[in-house]
Length: 238
Image 1 (cartoon, rainbow, N blue to C red):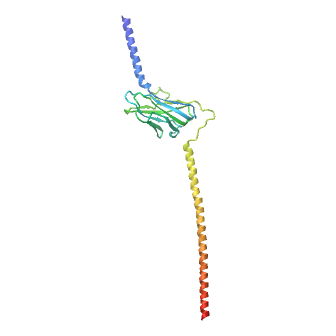
Image 2: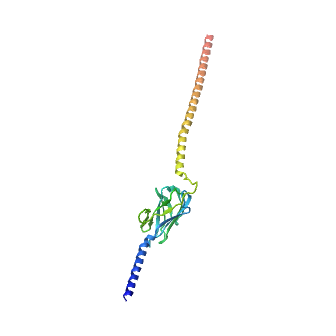
């Protein structure tokens, strides 16, 4: 009889322990993930897929914010796929994607294309998810030497860069350079053009002035000659 009671108690304790473990692990099982079409350093035009697992039983996702790691600028990312009606908006350190509330229990999945991955061993994408009831899940903790984070940020492990791969110049840098070049050219070109224009104008004015002077002298000579002829005729008549 005593053995039977002991067995029952051990069974009850085990069941309670299992239930507690499941209850504790339940919320932690929901998390954010990232995968890549080519998880390799310096790979170009890589498609990243972000998945935010739904953990609310009463609300749906309305927004996902992603903080990009160093080496990836907001301008390097373009949206490929997203829930219907959701749109991307760049931020200073990443982007947000938001839209109509998703159905309760529906994961938030979206895909973006990155122009080129940086030369790194791993990339962490801090992710903040917002639900329709205002609840916010912050998957922003980075792995370290201590215990495993309770709300880990999505991390993408990268293979070594392929032989001969090199970082591409950022479009913004080339744009700035071309802007400076065009600006310098435009600063100098108008000066030369205006100098030539002014020189031509001065030459034209000088030629006009010279022509006017010559005409004035000719008219003066004609007047003097006419006056002299008139005086000569008057004296002859007299």
